[in-house]
Image (tube, rainbow, N blue to C red; front, top):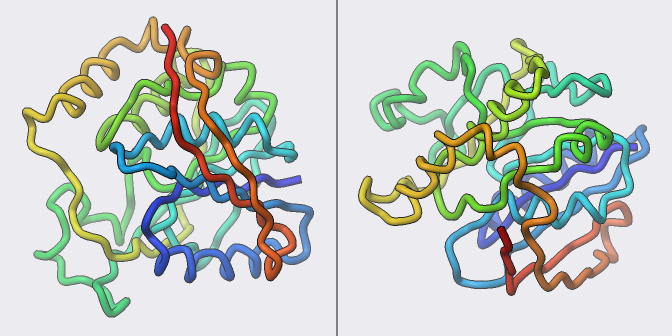
Length: 236
């Protein structure tokens, strides 16, 4: 069974596009979709949302999915138990009208993504349930923008697991304003420090975060569970 976990807040137009597409792709499979919504106004805490949703997931394969990554062609989310997997091989960035963005309008580090994403860690990644719990989930201390996906990639490598990638798969990056903070933003600086400390990072994970979780069903989507998550509590 697949558990597709979508980190979410205030991206209704993205979710309205992504949800039916995932339901179409998984129509013949055993799956659930979990929308992990951060229900507060604090900076986005994606890894915490993923951890708190994953411990409630029912599947054997966990697909951690940004809400603005829309799967298009040559898509596969399958992997082996001990093989972390990136489904994203190429990304085409769209504008507000869902048309391809001009190259000069795309942030510099992403302008070649229509050819290859290289070793990019963001967007979508897949772990077996067994591997997720064996490696203690994700580091929840990242807050706001930056480095949480790189840390997940590199902590798995540090533990001896080799990532595989579907280099053929094309995703659309749905439009949103650039959310990168100033370089001197306190949380951005702290995220970079956390990323540099990979050895101790592997000791941090599921047991370091809790939160208030309310679950709702979606009557029109029988395979979808909606979690509203807030009041995060962290312990070292």
